[in-house]
Amino acid sequence: MRRLFNWDKKYLYWGVTAFCVIACSILFYMALAYLPKLGTAFGKLARILSPFIWGLVITYLLSPLNKVLYKNVFFPLTVKLSGRKKAGMPRLAKGLSVLLSLIVFIAVITALVYLIIPQLYASIETIVNNSSSYITQISEWSQGMLANYPEVRDFITEKFEELNTNIFAWIRDTILPRFGSFVTNVTAGVYYFVRGIYNLVIGIIVSVYLLGNGESAMARAKRLCYCVFGMEKAEKLRDAIRFTDKTFMGFINGKLLDSAIIGLICYIVCAILNMPYALLVSVIVGVTNVIPFFGPLIGAIPSAFIILLVDPLKCLIFVIFVVILQQVDGNIIGPKILGSSIGINGFWVMFSIILGAGLVGFWGMLLGVPVFVVIYTGVIMLVEKRLAKRGLPVDAEDYVELDHIDPVSRRPVKHAELEDEDETEEKKTPAE
Image (cartoon, rainbow, N blue to C red):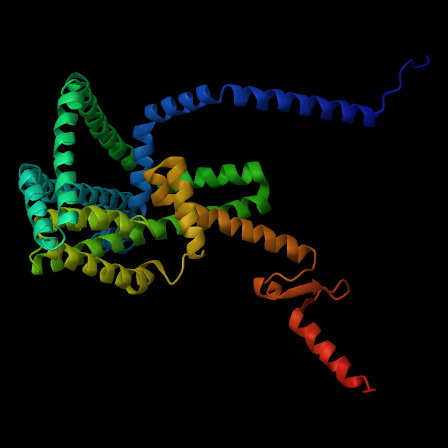
């Protein structure tokens, strides 16, 4: 029987390709149309899973300490006490290391709450109670400094009076009418505080399971990785994950240690110089120092203003001290802890912080640098791989003052070499 229609695989492939393109276009359009709803859905999902996210974060932060305690403390100790390696010894050592890691974590949080928070509250309460006297003191100080400049003095006095009038008008016309919404916001704040405590408790419980069963979970993840991607791609993926983990863990631990040292140094020096609100100022400087590049400026401005309310001369001394401290941190302490370089120059650091802050806010400022380092390194590796595949120079220094690349030898030819060749040719040419 004669076939009425002959199948051609080429047209079949074209049809399937056209169908896939149209389907993807429709899906892309729907994704753009429902993007706000998708964002709301992801936000709701993130709120539901927030205890598990907290647990993953706590596990990630405590995993280095847990590994050190297991390998160097509890496992050798349990083996030594038992006289020989029994079947239950590794499990007992693992449980003890998880328990001590969580005790250290809870002890640090408790110390921050009970040692720093009351002092911060007392400092802020003192500032609020003495705010009127601070304003008066600054006004009198400015008038004394500008006694020989009556026009400037009258202008500043007028502005202070306008400021006081505007503040009272703002309280009368804005704050008092919105007192009901203020109570609602306080109630919402209490709700979020209680929810945060709930997330923290559940996160600690989740971290116990993850820290105790981390090896088995990692083994299953590796097995799935090799099953899905194959051996070669799985090895590349594992290398990328290891590099990302090393970058993030090194950056976070280094910045936390660096900020703790800076905050401690700031508190000691402020206490010696008898600075007002030494603990409050030191906490602000230490916490904002976690943010790269802009952190010192962010912490120095409110701290200097707080000291300015009490003593303008000490404010000047504090500003000079903070500048010296940040120079010491940027050139000595920071490089010793974080390494000589994070892999990108200052321009990309500033770019990553601004971009991260614009997209995610505070967490973008904090983690924008390591995220950008990972992306930047991945792009560089891809570029170098493609250049090596095409037989072109890989090192960036080969492209400095590059004129062209020789199409035969694939060797970079620079402007200096061409100038030398031109000079040689001119010397060989006989003078007329």
